[in-house]
Length: 383
Ligand SMILES: [Zn+2]
Ligand SMILES: [Zn+2]
Image 1 (cartoon, helix red, strand yellow):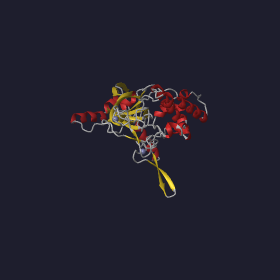
Image 2: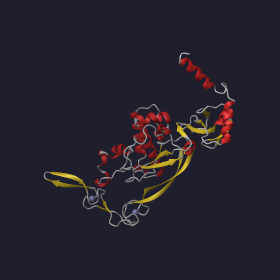
Image 3: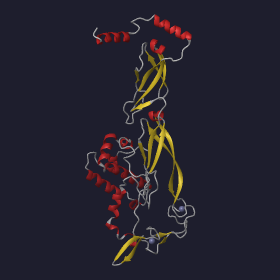
Image 4: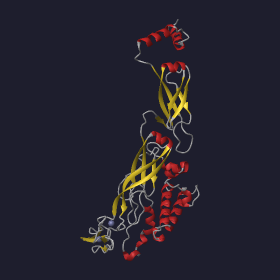
């Protein structure tokens, strides 16, 4: 992914600027880079996309506050909003994404659209639908960050007809029913009502010879593969937006976006607690008594852990910096090792004799916990 520019910089406004000034700056830039002005220049199109993206965040009070605090990462973090915060996916048109384009086109074409193209209504450019992709990764991958291949199907503009749906070499004909306006007027009693033309379905054009490649739809399905860089520290619910990787737009509108929702799988050994991971390591009762150097698994390999003599069950050891990377680049988390002391349940006769001998050799110093308990019990009974 290309590095994203600062949104304030994109709109050319200072950070403490008012909402109204953000709006003004946006509209000015949107006019400047509109495809009608630039003739569909690719660089201008990208620029416009960037402007739209910046405005989409900065016009929204909540999104802006989050962006101010966390930068671009703030957008990508699912956080509390999680999946619910994102409305109707895969719906028609601009989908759940509140496209700044609506506002933009209001201003450009609004009431002043009369003289354009000999009275023909221009179909408004619309951003394509957003796509959603669920990406499962392991906890180990989430800890360090990973590169993942994402393969998904989306529609592409048909390469034969460039999306017009008409067989190459032929032109779509102006619809005779509506004279290309896409709307027809029908008298009904005293009134006349305007309806979308049924013959051309409002497009104003009739395709007489459909493109054979796409059967006149102007779109074809294609597999797309992308390589996604996931930063270390991502968690279930983290969201990544890949701008312009969604469905193609209508009438020259930009593509929708691809949203990647991360799902971190449960690990057999490690349990995540924020940026820390906790794991339980069984040690024998002998190791707990005499102490030992253990090799413990970590998220990236192995580490040595010294268990001192007399280690009690449930003792926690902290391996600093052996946890999960921080998404915002702060301190790495720790690995917490919880000692589980294993008491054998099946022993041989010889082992039993040894342990009984050990018991015979024990005195009050061997079991201070027991001694303290007995003293407390005496007091409790009023002795
Ligand atoms: Zn085609
Ligand atoms: Zn028509």
